[in-house]
Image (cartoon, rainbow over all chains, first blue to last red; front, side, top):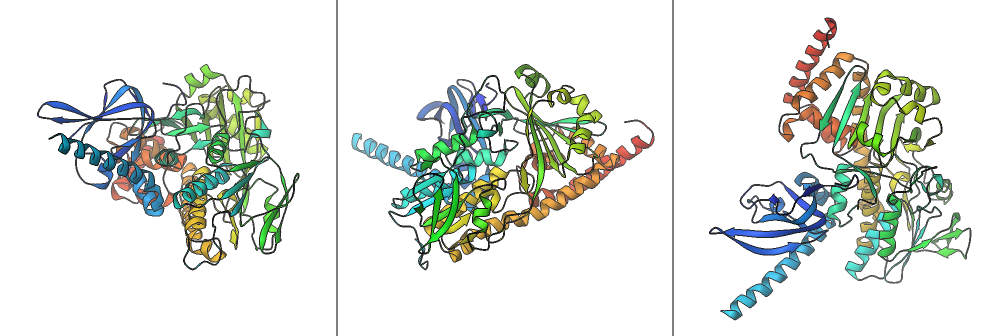
Length: 123
Length: 447
């Protein structure tokens, strides 16, 4: 790892979060890519690939639910952990701090809508 | 826009920012980002005469260059990723030195979440320039967002028909709808704002001492690695001392009532010589500075169409000045976009953020006063280290002393939180127990 590289390096295929585990932090990708998967009936369903600057694990900060998906490094990925307390304190002081998260969630809902339409149209 | 404000920014408004350090760049970046979101087209001019791509004092804003754990996380969520070219070294642990012993303390996550940076391009005499300036990186982000850079020193600020007017050393005087002071406490430009007739007065300051020691990459790796070394020594007037690893250099930072005698006493202290014997020789021809650090709040850091942010307004005591620059800059930008630019708007929406920093500094003063008392009593410092060492096998939140020390010395949490954590019964009982053992061992002459 370079001396100036912040966060933690995860090797290709290494899990960063696991579906079903509890979590009290979110993550920001500093370099590389990660893959988001959901496990159902013993099978892994690929959901998306996230890049540098993307966040994941943020749903655990808003809901007291377990992790909804597994996230693994796709190639080497460097990821920074963001503590729940730091995130919520900043949002409390400055609500615009959550803007990028809302923007990304909005983008994902748009993608899910498109996928839903495709599935319903195909069936 | 503010519903009640008579003074507000609108498309075509002009904003002048004096100072292109972190406060000025953060302000410009967030102002333009929020303006884009609400559909306002602003012109932002940043006046900065320094060239951050030049090594040595000409391109440096004189600072120890530590980006706190909380700020690294905050900036990441804001979309501001600090690349390895900007970060000289990631920090994941610290070594705490007292008069008699030392302890290495790791953060629970074992992750690089503190960044050490050069505010400029590196110290005077640097042989090989590696990486980029932190201030230069932030300025680039502001320029990419649409700000203009005016690479000129400002010589006068006056009023022109109720609007602030800036006269630089070159070019025509420019009139702005909003003028932002982001000049730090070491800038002669502070007097321009004090003479503007808004009753602004600069904060009280004290001297610090920073020097860049050329030890070479291998020595820095072997001796310090990714650890910051913090010293809790019984030297009168010394509030804080640290060795901060960077590329080929170690930054020595002393905060307190610093004079030459105190610097020499520190360098000759056996705990310092034992940890890094090369230091004293390396200081002889090293790039050094004695920047002033804010020790209080400015008076009236805002008026109609004028606001002062960062150190020249309110800054955190001893630590995380860049963190308070971010907070005050963003609060001022949010106020200017969503509320207005009158004195009342800044009082209602910007000043509370400054006041919360100022309020927290009172706890900081108390915390450092307690640290100063403890430094004089070896059994207490021994108790601190014993407790911290014993915690290392425990889970994160159970490392009560380690996290208190980490947050005090790295500026990663606010001082009020840190202080309240020390009042927890589990913290107090464990500390009293370890301090008692420390006292008994000291009495029997066995450490």
